[in-house]
Length: 152
Image (cartoon, rainbow, N blue to C red; front, top):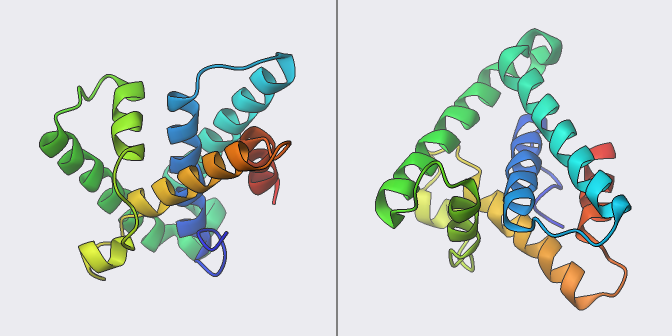
């Protein structure tokens, strides 16, 4: 998956966090206790890592500056998206489904240019790839894949 390879640590962390959020809020069904636990583990670890990046940047001093810029630009892009696509901002599931419904065949840098540091639609591409693998390959469970990505 090229979305998590050869990118800066803070960018990678934001990509993983947003992909986790998209999958968490769009796929609420779980077949058994393992999937429930894996889903909750991914969400908890994702939230904690984002907290460290944004609220405790001293713990990640090498990425503190650009991480906050990426976070700010990504939040701004989510706000712009909600204004143009009209999802209710407090309906997390609806917003996530709308984001996952966006055509991502064109790389986001081609649309946004290199000025924006947002990773929203790169993360959308990662979430879609995990969903695709889950559907195409038996046993490629996206929750297991996401857990492996976080543990990495």
